[in-house]
Image 1 (cartoon, one colour):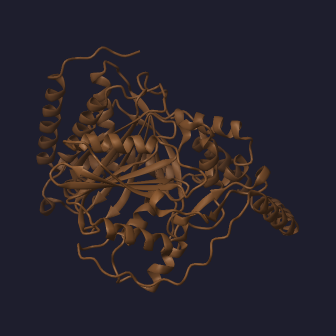
Image 2 (cartoon, one colour):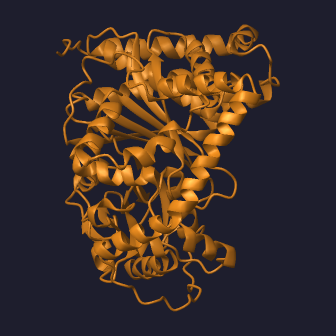
Length: 525
């Protein structure tokens, strides 16, 4: 990982805290325990493509230093006996770096497709739950003298933003190698047992019981007093319950008939777009990068269904909304999920963008946006079969999940090699596919993790999504010609820009001609 010396004391303190508290949050515990159903595995995979062969000795030294500087990377999850407390991160007294960091060589010719096949196989392989849940593999023999680095990490350790925070600290901005700053001697890893954790948890709960009871009673009395003194309080409570019902709904739309099946098989695919093009297009229409990303993918989903012989007006998709705030520790998981009936029937990309903007504004205003985090402490106490059934019903109802992760703007290097691409593959966790975007040094790297039973034509899906993104990128015009923000929205901006309209129609027509040129496929049951 790292090979830099200009690491400040503040950075070292961040690495010490990376990953969050010793006790898993209720939401993280749900992700960990729900893996009793293998369809709900929460494995995140990052594939970094390197322009040359890295120095293996430097890589070993960098990983050794980083795992000592970041204690979470040398800890494993332990579940207290009888479930008397939340799962905990405990030191692994038998930590072996050479188990977690390995290297392999691709057979000739070493294509990108071979690399993705290897990465998807690694992602499908379950973690050893008695070791820290991460693995890294240096892949040698990639064509044109390149190499790759695959990092596989459990979602209970961190969400995508936390992983990017770790990478920004771990990777160097230049090729030059430097000595590592000295670290304080690590304390000897203590071997903890499940019985110890259970006893500690039961004792802590016993001590906290009077305090918790007093707080709960105080909260009830304060709420009752508020309802009596504030006429609108009861209405606010009813609004919150209605909001919770909307946020927990399992069906944003009926779903696609060709994306219903689920399996344990994954398929990785990738494509990229220029970050500058996406920024220019978003500024041209007064929208965010995420608005355009979603609008482009929805256009791609429409194309895919048309080519598969299926007419679909709406498709249920989910996407995360970050709940991170200033001062939060790095790593960990801090997000809420939104379920969106994606409007496949809207042919105009500007109308799709407007639809997305209205939906996101509505969701962000939901009083119960974080309802899953609030009910997680109750859900995690449910018997595992019930927990997995509830989780599976929520995720399987989504045909796709979408994630846009802020990446790293500056160049990145690993042990002397330049990182040219950073492909993100988030877990499907029971849905039909997971599509993630990470921006990296001028590129938008888009990774598609699809369930093989749901997506039977992955090459067609990838080309359809690429065409959908090309359609929204055609909305761009030179930044110098872009006017300031307009209060009238995208419809007024569309009337003002005949150039953008013409470009959009031209690109859309070209995409339609390319799609129609392919042999038609029969609709699949």
